[in-house]
Length: 218
Image (cartoon, rainbow, N blue to C red; front, side, top):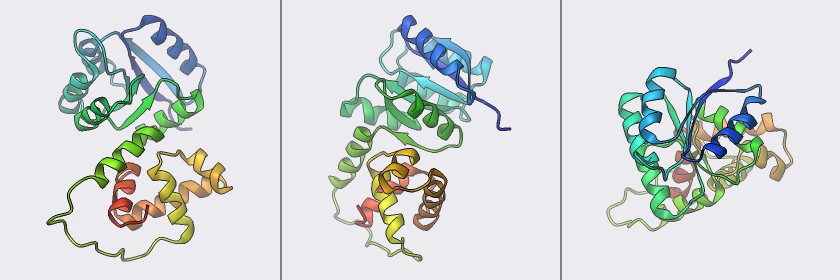
């Protein structure tokens, strides 16, 4: 049996932390190992508790989530950080991604999506809210093309079904959502995503979306 994902919750609102911990503790896939009220406390607790994933709010007193993520990237490189915040403005999104968050979720995410994101994050998979994925792909589309290398065709082209999957990945859709959209079993979607990553020669879903955009596939 796979061990539960060890999670540290970081948010300056005590009531939200407590409610989120209560929600997650009933999930067999999750073990909440601690809570922190600011980024400084989060860095300290990470060294002590060694969580798999940190659910990190961005706007907090003492040390915000961006600064804390930067610290963790250096001091605890094995810890995955998922931003969980109310805000999805461009400044927050791109600052968090530059700091090294593996995923970016909004606080209106469903409990099922949050659990799925935590499990995926422990595997090293990037998880983005659809609105955030759209911002990221749009930002890439705005980059200047002067001097950019010519598009190199894939050694093994994507199938039609894999193209459907990669386009939904670019929208930030989870495996469950893709399965619903394409009327496929979730296990089938997981296999298709693995094949897409291999053919695009990328490590995670975010890189797959960016690579597909570069190739004009979405």
